[in-house]
Image (cartoon, rainbow, N blue to C red; front, side, top):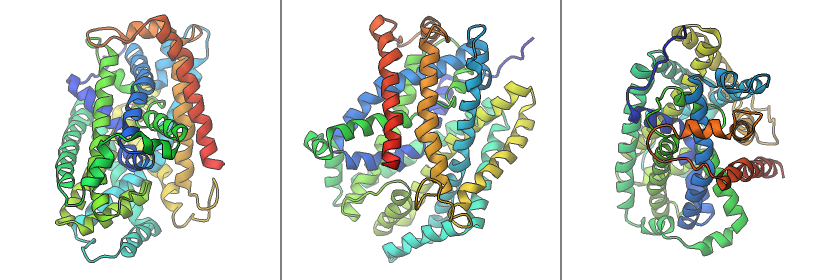
Length: 461
């Protein structure tokens, strides 16, 4: 007899953990930059439309695969595929995505934790020049021992949480961190909106002006909105499917997916409320992107603010929570791979995978110092850039395409099986008409293909 699968203690637990998986660096690392680049509030409106029409259907498919199979992606295809088909081979592709994501995400989480400590102990001060702030970041990257210590703390801490099981570990801790994250962000957003001189940033962020989008190029803005809507939800690697496997049939999955999406969007939106007024007040409206935004631009902003040490500490604490909730969610998926495939205990899966992830994480952090001569995708690139490119520009879109094909084609799980599963219970119904079937079967795959191809065009041409 099959062992009874552990389930979430509450519906809110499922929503918070699924949102915690989706909420991560993309909400702060990338969202404010592309909003600034492509026209502010007008771009936000377009992004929200793509989030619903592109991201939501694929998210529902991941949840449905997990709930119908009651397994992680390691065995969900085996259980749902038609007899004689070979869909189960794609599980190795999804599983590889989780491991490669953690090979660099743990390092970046370590950076965030390090900066939280730096602000707490006062390493940044009001008289510090922009060059000195930038030097702090470069010095951290040049020191593999510091990065290794924080990376190992992240790996040990997150696997320790997962080792306590779904309810007592993952659900309990993730809910607390998500609650703290939201409270921290709201406090910081209120403070940022009240900064003298920040009103111009608020106006840019909240008042739609489509002429700004035209200046940036309508096609470029639409592609950026599609890409951000796609990548922000962490769809395509099975990290959300695992949480579908832990929930019952009481609620329809479209409504649950919409709740997760709203929470993810709330965090991204509030991040903009924090960043734009502050950057307009203290940095001439320049935000930067990626590491430069988080580790150079914002520390410079905090240094010029009253109580900057406090606000800087709070910001990097919230960023650390955002990163840790994602890592805990993906670690839970990785642990489920081991238990589903081998039948081993959770503690054994934690121990073995903890060592594997720690070892696999070293190339990314060494790529900034001892292995800095390795530039795998062009001059100036790092090993971390390669790993990020493999996941973001390849595994996420291709993995999503696999879910789309599996859930809509007769040779796969099929449209009827998918929609029957998605629409069990109460709540918002996933549309089942011919128009929706055509849209999900052909239009969304075409959009995903465009995102995949344009990712290569942007990277190399």
